[in-house]
Image 1 (cartoon, rainbow, N blue to C red):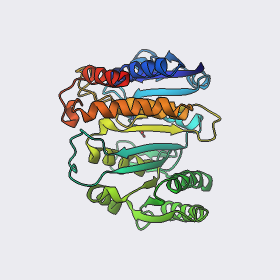
Image 2: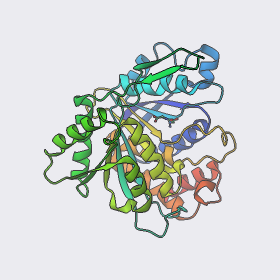
Image 3: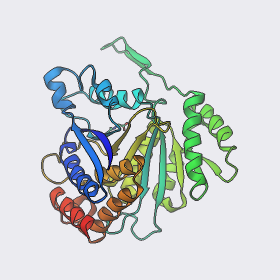
Image 4: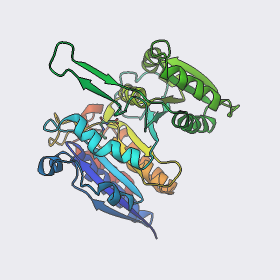
Length: 350
Ligand code: GGG
């Protein structure tokens, strides 16, 4: 039996509902595929912050480093400043463990009500650069409270950072339809974005079977809404990738569907798997949360841990529950979080 130790952080809001739902499915899959998944639970997040003044303990990263993977729900609470919840937990994990790729699939799923339901199937992989770019702590505020108060925030791109994201995306495109679209805004952002374009172009030249198209992000946003089926792999900076993936998943039906893998492709550190959505405090505790993004993230984790058959089994199970029209309300279905999870468990056993 293969053993994997998995650190579980349900976090905040609907994270506390979708993580247990996904763990139930993972446990059933583990049983059927003879996998030994050892889950260790950490009560870190905004409640922990309200008790201790920090999102995780001082040695939190050291504790996580002992695990093979991290399974996260959501972070963010109305009672804690957003900067604290993100920079106190998720961003340090992504950085410490060199999870420089955030892979976010955007895919049409049968049985999901979508604003674009009548069009072609969508199958896009968004590769978001995950360690630098617009998510930078370089900057500051001056003259607080005065009329000339000023805020400065620097964007940081490094040749190494852009190049490794471009390599990852180009290799993916090469294994698929061979089309790589790079999101940029080089006409307005005149230093960092042309540098991004230059490094991506030089890198992708090493993949002769990949066609690179650079699109201004505003045009790409429209493209994603109007003709998403013509896109294959998208590579984008930290902020642009985040925005495009929320948009993409909404086009396929709901942000609640979208999974993500924060990958350390070099395998030196644990990777982290989380849905794209946040903590959604407005629906938390009501049984309305869609657990698909979390369950799908679990399938991506199984794939990453070297169990493609188990991953596919889980993927087919939630796709089948959706196809039967048993989705949650956000995708036009009748189910609560628990009812949909029960439908996935039943599909696993078929
Ligand atoms: N699923 C994790 C979560 O809570 N994400 C919300 C969020 O705003 N994440 C920021 C980011 O991915 O940059």
